[in-house]
Amino acid sequence: MTAAEDVTVVPANEASWDDVAAVFGTTDYPGRCQCQRFKVAGWIWRDSTQEQRTAMLRAQTACGEPGAATSGLVAYVGGEPAGWVAVEPRIAYPKLRGTRVPWTGRSEDKDDDGVWAVTCFAVRKGFRGRGLTYPLARATIGFARERGARALEAYPMITQPGKEITWGELHVGARQVFADAGFEEVGHPTPRRVLMRIELSIVD
Image (cartoon, rainbow, N blue to C red; front, side, top):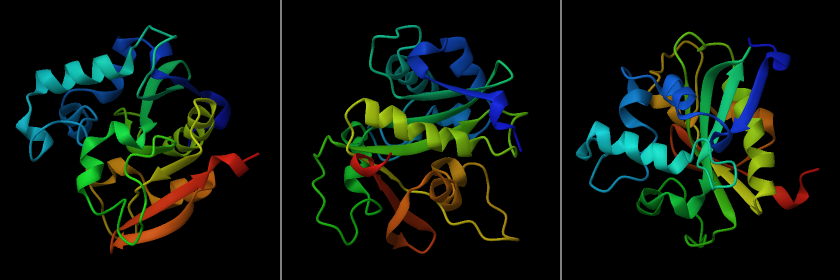
Protein backbone atom coordinates (compact mmCIF):
# COMPACT_ATOMS: atom_id res chain seq x y z
CA MET A 1 0.00 0.00 0.00
CA THR A 2 1.34 3.42 -0.95
CA ALA A 3 1.68 5.70 2.08
CA ALA A 4 -0.72 8.64 1.81
CA GLU A 5 2.03 11.15 2.46
CA ASP A 6 3.92 9.91 -0.62
CA VAL A 7 0.97 10.61 -2.96
CA THR A 8 0.20 13.96 -4.56
CA VAL A 9 -2.78 14.39 -6.87
CA VAL A 10 -3.08 17.34 -9.27
CA PRO A 11 -5.39 18.31 -12.13
CA ALA A 12 -3.99 17.06 -15.43
CA ASN A 13 -3.69 20.60 -16.79
CA GLU A 14 -1.15 21.25 -14.04
CA ALA A 15 0.89 18.23 -15.11
CA SER A 16 3.03 17.79 -18.21
CA TRP A 17 1.95 15.74 -21.18
CA ASP A 18 5.07 13.61 -20.75
CA ASP A 19 3.87 12.69 -17.25
CA VAL A 20 0.40 11.73 -18.48
CA ALA A 21 1.90 9.71 -21.32
CA ALA A 22 4.16 7.91 -18.84
CA VAL A 23 1.14 6.86 -16.76
CA PHE A 24 -0.72 5.45 -19.74
CA GLY A 25 2.29 3.75 -21.29
CA THR A 26 1.97 2.16 -24.71
CA THR A 27 1.48 -1.58 -24.39
CA ASP A 28 -1.57 -2.68 -22.40
CA TYR A 29 -5.21 -1.61 -22.06
CA PRO A 30 -4.72 1.98 -20.80
CA GLY A 31 -2.09 2.67 -23.45
CA ARG A 32 -4.35 1.43 -26.23
CA CYS A 33 -7.62 3.00 -25.07
CA GLN A 34 -6.16 6.35 -23.94
CA CYS A 35 -9.29 6.86 -21.82
CA GLN A 36 -11.52 7.24 -24.89
CA ARG A 37 -13.91 4.32 -24.45
CA PHE A 38 -16.89 6.56 -23.68
CA LYS A 39 -15.91 9.32 -26.10
CA VAL A 40 -14.88 8.00 -29.50
CA ALA A 41 -17.29 7.69 -32.41
CA GLY A 42 -18.08 4.22 -33.69
CA TRP A 43 -19.21 1.01 -32.08
CA ILE A 44 -16.10 0.45 -29.95
CA TRP A 45 -13.00 2.50 -29.22
CA ARG A 46 -10.94 0.28 -31.50
CA ASP A 47 -12.84 1.79 -34.46
CA SER A 48 -10.54 4.78 -34.01
CA THR A 49 -6.78 4.75 -34.48
CA GLN A 50 -4.15 4.86 -31.76
CA GLU A 51 -2.99 8.23 -33.05
CA GLN A 52 -6.52 9.64 -32.92
CA ARG A 53 -7.10 8.47 -29.36
CA THR A 54 -3.77 9.84 -28.17
CA ALA A 55 -4.47 13.20 -29.79
CA MET A 56 -7.91 13.28 -28.17
CA LEU A 57 -6.50 12.61 -24.72
CA ARG A 58 -3.81 15.25 -25.17
CA ALA A 59 -6.41 17.86 -26.16
CA GLN A 60 -8.78 16.87 -23.33
CA THR A 61 -6.15 17.04 -20.60
CA ALA A 62 -4.86 20.49 -21.67
CA CYS A 63 -1.55 19.68 -19.98
CA GLY A 64 0.51 22.72 -19.09
CA GLU A 65 -2.52 25.04 -19.27
CA PRO A 66 -3.57 25.60 -15.63
CA GLY A 67 -6.42 27.94 -16.58
CA ALA A 68 -8.07 25.51 -19.01
CA ALA A 69 -10.67 22.83 -18.43
CA THR A 70 -9.20 19.37 -18.04
CA SER A 71 -10.48 15.82 -18.11
CA GLY A 72 -8.84 14.21 -15.10
CA LEU A 73 -6.29 14.04 -12.32
CA VAL A 74 -2.74 12.76 -12.18
CA ALA A 75 -1.21 11.10 -9.11
CA TYR A 76 2.46 11.28 -8.25
CA VAL A 77 4.25 8.91 -5.91
CA GLY A 78 7.51 10.27 -4.59
CA GLY A 79 7.48 12.79 -7.44
CA GLU A 80 7.02 10.14 -10.14
CA PRO A 81 3.86 10.17 -12.33
CA ALA A 82 1.99 7.04 -11.29
CA GLY A 83 -1.79 7.21 -11.79
CA TRP A 84 -4.72 8.82 -13.56
CA VAL A 85 -8.43 9.16 -13.00
CA ALA A 86 -10.92 10.60 -15.48
CA VAL A 87 -13.53 12.95 -13.98
CA GLU A 88 -15.70 15.35 -15.95
CA PRO A 89 -19.33 16.39 -16.34
CA ARG A 90 -21.31 13.29 -17.25
CA ILE A 91 -22.40 14.92 -20.52
CA ALA A 92 -18.74 14.88 -21.65
CA TYR A 93 -19.10 11.12 -22.24
CA PRO A 94 -21.41 10.63 -25.24
CA LYS A 95 -21.39 6.86 -24.99
CA LEU A 96 -22.75 6.88 -21.46
CA ARG A 97 -26.03 7.99 -23.02
CA GLY A 98 -26.34 4.71 -24.87
CA THR A 99 -25.43 2.27 -22.10
CA ARG A 100 -27.87 0.95 -19.54
CA VAL A 101 -25.39 1.15 -16.67
CA PRO A 102 -26.09 4.76 -15.61
CA TRP A 103 -29.81 4.72 -16.36
CA THR A 104 -31.39 1.39 -15.41
CA GLY A 105 -34.16 1.98 -12.89
CA ARG A 106 -33.76 5.77 -12.92
CA SER A 107 -35.48 8.66 -14.65
CA GLU A 108 -32.30 10.73 -14.52
CA ASP A 109 -31.90 13.66 -16.91
CA LYS A 110 -29.12 12.61 -19.27
CA ASP A 111 -28.35 16.26 -20.04
CA ASP A 112 -27.90 17.38 -16.44
CA ASP A 113 -24.51 19.08 -16.49
CA GLY A 114 -24.47 19.34 -12.71
CA VAL A 115 -23.77 15.62 -12.41
CA TRP A 116 -20.17 14.58 -12.99
CA ALA A 117 -18.80 11.10 -13.60
CA VAL A 118 -15.66 9.14 -12.74
CA THR A 119 -15.15 6.77 -15.63
CA CYS A 120 -11.60 5.49 -15.77
CA PHE A 121 -8.46 4.77 -13.78
CA ALA A 122 -5.02 4.08 -15.16
CA VAL A 123 -2.08 3.11 -12.98
CA ARG A 124 1.42 3.02 -14.39
CA LYS A 125 3.25 -0.27 -14.52
CA GLY A 126 5.45 -0.54 -11.47
CA PHE A 127 2.88 1.23 -9.27
CA ARG A 128 -0.01 -1.22 -9.53
CA GLY A 129 -1.24 -3.22 -6.57
CA ARG A 130 -0.38 -0.42 -4.13
CA GLY A 131 -3.85 1.03 -3.56
CA LEU A 132 -3.34 4.13 -5.68
CA THR A 133 -6.93 4.20 -6.91
CA TYR A 134 -8.08 5.04 -3.36
CA PRO A 135 -6.48 8.51 -3.14
CA LEU A 136 -7.37 9.15 -6.77
CA ALA A 137 -11.06 8.42 -6.11
CA ARG A 138 -11.06 10.64 -3.03
CA ALA A 139 -9.46 13.48 -4.99
CA THR A 140 -12.26 13.50 -7.57
CA ILE A 141 -14.71 14.76 -4.95
CA GLY A 142 -13.08 18.08 -4.21
CA PHE A 143 -12.07 18.54 -7.84
CA ALA A 144 -15.64 18.16 -9.10
CA ARG A 145 -17.22 20.19 -6.30
CA GLU A 146 -14.82 23.12 -6.81
CA ARG A 147 -15.91 23.21 -10.45
CA GLY A 148 -19.62 23.38 -9.72
CA ALA A 149 -20.71 19.75 -9.65
CA ARG A 150 -23.58 18.98 -7.28
CA ALA A 151 -23.25 15.20 -7.57
CA LEU A 152 -20.61 12.73 -8.67
CA GLU A 153 -21.22 9.25 -10.05
CA ALA A 154 -19.12 6.17 -10.72
CA TYR A 155 -19.84 2.81 -12.34
CA PRO A 156 -17.41 0.40 -10.67
CA MET A 157 -17.04 -3.32 -10.74
CA ILE A 158 -17.72 -5.77 -7.93
CA THR A 159 -14.63 -7.74 -7.04
CA GLN A 160 -14.81 -11.12 -5.36
CA PRO A 161 -12.07 -12.86 -3.36
CA GLY A 162 -10.35 -15.58 -5.32
CA LYS A 163 -11.70 -14.46 -8.70
CA GLU A 164 -9.13 -12.97 -11.03
CA ILE A 165 -10.00 -9.74 -12.81
CA THR A 166 -7.95 -8.41 -15.68
CA TRP A 167 -6.70 -4.84 -15.55
CA GLY A 168 -8.82 -3.90 -18.57
CA GLU A 169 -11.98 -4.96 -16.80
CA LEU A 170 -11.18 -2.94 -13.70
CA HIS A 171 -10.45 0.36 -15.44
CA VAL A 172 -13.77 1.70 -14.05
CA GLY A 173 -12.59 1.01 -10.50
CA ALA A 174 -13.71 -1.36 -7.77
CA ARG A 175 -16.80 -0.84 -5.62
CA GLN A 176 -14.76 -0.76 -2.40
CA VAL A 177 -12.61 2.09 -3.70
CA PHE A 178 -15.64 4.35 -4.06
CA ALA A 179 -17.28 3.15 -0.85
CA ASP A 180 -14.10 4.11 0.98
CA ALA A 181 -14.31 7.60 -0.55
CA GLY A 182 -17.89 8.05 0.68
CA PHE A 183 -19.89 7.14 -2.41
CA GLU A 184 -23.12 5.21 -1.83
CA GLU A 185 -24.55 2.45 -3.97
CA VAL A 186 -27.72 3.71 -5.65
CA GLY A 187 -28.17 1.09 -8.35
CA HIS A 188 -27.15 -2.38 -9.43
CA PRO A 189 -27.76 -2.42 -13.19
CA THR A 190 -25.82 -5.60 -13.98
CA PRO A 191 -24.61 -8.57 -11.91
CA ARG A 192 -21.03 -7.26 -11.86
CA ARG A 193 -21.52 -3.50 -11.96
CA VAL A 194 -22.96 -1.01 -9.51
CA LEU A 195 -23.90 2.64 -9.76
CA MET A 196 -22.41 4.71 -6.95
CA ARG A 197 -23.01 8.36 -6.21
CA ILE A 198 -22.11 11.12 -3.78
CA GLU A 199 -24.15 14.28 -3.34
CA LEU A 200 -21.56 17.01 -3.15
CA SER A 201 -23.84 19.64 -1.67
CA ILE A 202 -23.94 17.71 1.61
CA VAL A 203 -20.28 16.69 1.79
CA ASP A 204 -18.24 18.53 4.43
